[in-house]
Amino acid sequence: MPAIPYGADPGGAPLSAVLIHGRGRTAEEMIGLAERIGLPEIAWRALRAPGGSWYPDSFLAPLDVNRPQLDRTIARVEQEVRALEALGAPRRRIALVGFSQGACVACEYVRRHPRRWGGMIAFTGGLFGPDGSVWEAPPLLDGTPVLLSNSDQDEFVPWTRTHETAAVFRRMGADVTLELYSGRDHVVGDEEIDEARAILRRALTGLQASPAFQEES
Image (tube, rainbow, N blue to C red; front, side):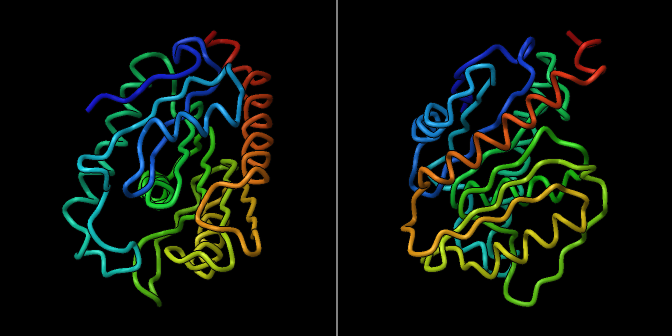
């Protein structure tokens, strides 16, 4: 299914962002998050999961339980990234933004495709695998700005996994912001939106000032 476009044109935008919704949620809801964040200079693209879910079980289950659906999902994100590249947006100017199940997908995608990205925002998510998992962490993210946020009482994503994920991305060389919101429900709160906006603004400022962007423009 094609992504829903919102905001600027990727060819001329300093930053594009792939939006990945949660289980049973919609691409339109992720466009709503983009509207809350603002930043009209970003080219947003919201993906749709077949049947409303990116993978069948908990992200904390053994990896084989969620294959092959998870692998197909990662391939779908890569397809969208390549489509943005074809429109003139290199990966250093592409961000991944997900909520819940979509946040877990964003984390897994970036871990499997380690390089300098425009950014990653994971609202209530973490890396896949059961307790005790160990993740490969090649130090190739080269300062990619990353936001990981969660509640201390989320029913789907334990704070411990979000904390572990932050440590993995730090080892990979990301510039990680980790935020805990005590008592927050399974939603994206206004404070998280503010934090995401600040991180994306910093990314935009850095990209627009870079000689590479000036040459590409």
